[in-house]
Amino acid sequence: MNLKQLEYFIAVAELLSFTKAAKKCYISQTAITLQIQSLEKRLGVSLFIRDKHHVELTAAGKVYLNEARAILIRAEEAAKLARTASEGVTGELSVGFIRGYEQSRFSETLRTFREAYPNISLHLIRDNMSALYHHLEDNSCDIVLNLSLAAQGYENMTHRFLKRFPLMAVLYPGHPLSGHNHLSYQDLAQEDFIIMQPHGRATDEAEEVLLCYNRGGFIPHIISRDREVQTVLLEVSAGFGIAILPEYAVRYYYNARNLIILPLLRSDGTPEEVDFEIIWKTENSNPSIEKLLQWMETHDYTE
Image (cartoon, rainbow, N blue to C red; front, top):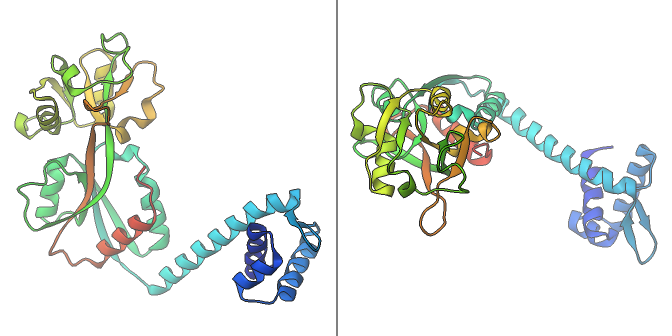
């Protein structure tokens, strides 16, 4: 068995025609027939039921089709990794990300990137939204993954849109609004808020304040601030107040008995969302930045 035989088998299986498959693969019908026969002999099973007018997959062929596709995909991925390793790309890359984003599939992006570029040393910085921009300004961070709310006022930065995440209202069981299927910002105008901000920050710099004011028309009553998602959720579950968090920060808590997580919707029924982006200092010439950008474009682990 070789990869070409798998390609020929998949072509015949998808087209259900040896003639069409031969044309697609640029070989003769006799050659593709012999290759399939060789594959069947190697496997010890018949992959096709065929006569002069009809071709169809056997039960074994249907199972093998899925496996053959997976083998070809894995072989191509292995070839890409080998080519990447042969490039000898080396360097260091400091990557910042907003608190809570560790709950997303970002770890899969980092893991596969390190496999592809084993000679690039990654350093991770986890911080709040505004602090990440400061890390870029003072060159302590090469690239950050961040909400785009506070992008204004920071010059010489290059921004690349990554994804939009839905915003979720997090309530404690028994809250008067906990029986709803969804909420709006206006529904929360009178609530006590627990927000993810370090102590000492001005209220008008808080991301949640900007969102509440821009989308709900009110300044939230903040009763507690904390830097960690887990502590915010603990305080919500204890009935201290409510929180608004991006979906990636709460995706593993939907089945928690002590939390109610509801989507926030606009008046037209569409989700309230927040933009997520990749930012780096325009003058930063670290070649590893482009490698990570290219990797994230082709390996979507941002869900």
